[in-house]
Length: 253
Picture 1 (cartoon, rainbow, N blue to C red):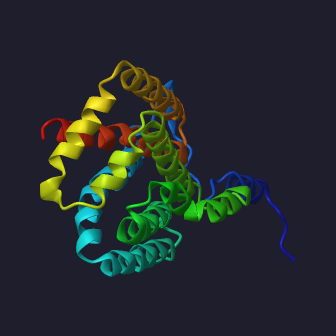
Picture 2: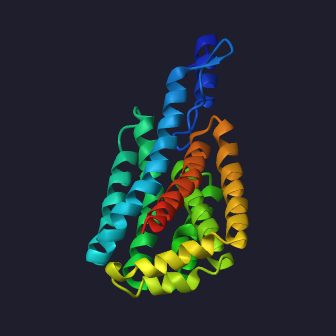
């Protein structure tokens, strides 16, 4: 029968304090400084969440118009890659975290493929379809599972809610429907009318108000040392980048 020695007891207690692989590792401190490696990792996840919200928008949009079934099938690729990264040996916890993030991204890709592929002419269906992964996400978070990917999805969904809310408040929904029913070459007049609607005092005031909400909700989690809050923050703040680029494109028409 084995017995606990002081050294084995200390090792057992240390193992109990090890962070879960589904959560961000705690940051190392040297005196009053945070370990640079932990800071670098947290900002990599922040940058990745910004990338996964903003860049695919401009890639998925033309892909969906060309082949919605291909876009939908790519969801399986994101799921497979995420699962593969999570199934790698436990000696590489960073791989599991990246896999977790990709699984959260798969929900946003799936919703985008469904809506922009078959229902883009009906704005009222946008939020319900974008929220297709919400029940699963909330269930996983209730069980403390997949924090990085699920909080990424929630951040992306929150940004979508703010954008759609502005479309309703600024009365841009009619322009949305018209844009989805015409060829790109015929969209210039519709975009010009939409920009004029945004530039009214009502449109500007509400834009400023919602931008402030996005900045507050997106910036506060940056102070956290946990990766899932950094990914949430990046997903929320990337909404400003995407909406800003669309506004610039519409204004230049």
